[in-house]
Image 1 (cartoon, rainbow, N blue to C red):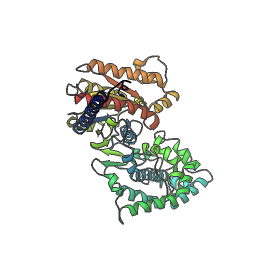
Image 2: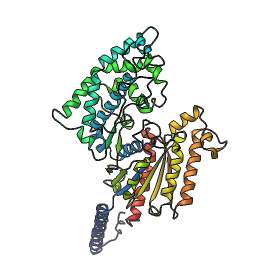
Image 3: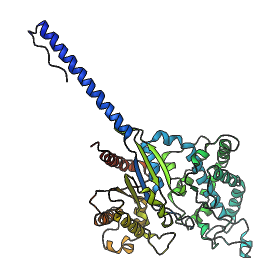
Image 4: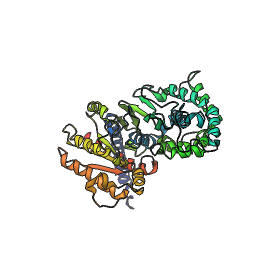
Length: 469
């Protein structure tokens, strides 16, 4: 605020006194501003990091199924990193490119393994497994074409091996059926490679290693993939392949079809991953993974705020590992895959995935250890829920308490939000707020709105804990 204008009949003495008072007031104002800024910086320096426990279903890796039952924890985590630490996220782009190439190459190799190299006559003689549903057309044209593609794409086997080693994949957990044919009894023949690393493996750093065994080998794989580009596209466009793929509904996941549909772009030497590409990568981490996130944007008081996000395994066998991370946590983000309502657990096929989420939610809501912790629940995969319901699957057939409510994504999502909120209210040891959001994690724009709301919630909780408000 500017000082008032001097009176018109002001004497020299009065003017001198007025200027002196204004200078004293201005100096005092500067001192106050400096003290406020000093206090703010000191508070920022001493404030505790926000600690988040990310909970949700994770595939049980010693079972062949690995599909829609996943909650999407890793995708939510990548969204956090992309929206709040974009510069750090961009630095990891080469590592994600290697993972995307591995995703693409492994699924192409898997598709080629679905087709036997022997002739239909040999298959009828019982010397090899007999393919089904158009693996061999009546005139044999498709089989000849696939044989040629298999021969020309043989270098992709070495590419898959190089990328697996470079990313430090755990061979005891990353499994793919090799040389199996349709008609085989092996359940693992219906799934592409499960790309698995152990926590603390530093796979991002491994992918950036220089030298003959490092980045040079990664560049070599990129050259091979670029050279095989036309044939990779030809595999996906082959009618016999499409006929076989139609049989495997779980195979037609967003990840698999997305990379195959974008193979022409992904195979180019100058390819740089987009956020949509990275959100669809398949990479499972076994064990508890700690991620340090330093906020790069937002308001001044939010910048350089540190978040520590613990990503823990969600299968029943890994839940005992959660306990040490409950201490001193700011919030728990619990992720429920809406589309899993008609699926069962991999590790126990007698248990429905949604009902298991209900039971797990009851357990953490009822815990006295977690009484003071903020709970945020994200209902993910709304898009897949909508597809299932639109295909005619009746939600009420699985969740009988839904009765005759409309069988659409909006009403089912609303019902589940109310059910989880009711459990929270009933079992919480003390009264506390619950924040819930519905989203599709692979839609970065829609998810960004949810993440901004979550950021504000977490910052308010952190300020309250440090008694700054």
